[in-house]
Length: 259
Image (tube, rainbow, N blue to C red; front, side):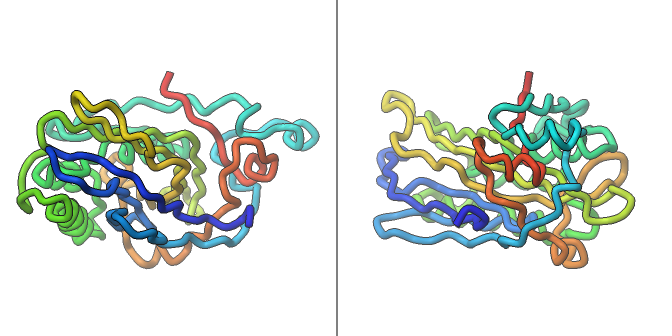
């Protein structure tokens, strides 16, 4: 169904330092990391809510109603994302303005830059972006990275093996306020994830068109990831992202640009 998000599990082979393993898929539900290893069997990842939210809560300013009906995410101008203005201990970009665009930019930046295999770096990153009301988020993030490491035959703690690179590319985003002030925003993200191994090239079956969300709270002058149930309980899924769908556009989906 067009309005239902499905985590598209697929068989994909990688060779990580000579170890045959499935592609690592790191998904987030309401800001809490859920890590799944796709192996030899077909698995289904966690689903997302399929409730239809009001199109009035768009992440960007919209043209007149008659013009809006003609747009799709693919035909409309992309959102020009804001750049981070600070770097938390060299681990992850921070420092985004207090606006809906700032929240969307932060969500995209965090999701693209979170490390998937280095648990020490992951702890630094999560400490930098976790809200004060969600202290367990840091340990959860680190725990899941360690599970991934063990799942691919690596020691539970350590850095990313030399010659292996994971890259996440967010293609579209939607930001929607969860309170009246705009200080708590759920940011929905549609992304691809790729793995590249030195001398062996890129994964020939990467994760594509995955959808996840982060709940961000304005705190101490920046956007922080919160997993507080009072906010995550309010998250309702928008229409599924489709670059050629006017309904996705009306619901607030926008393609993003780092330029």
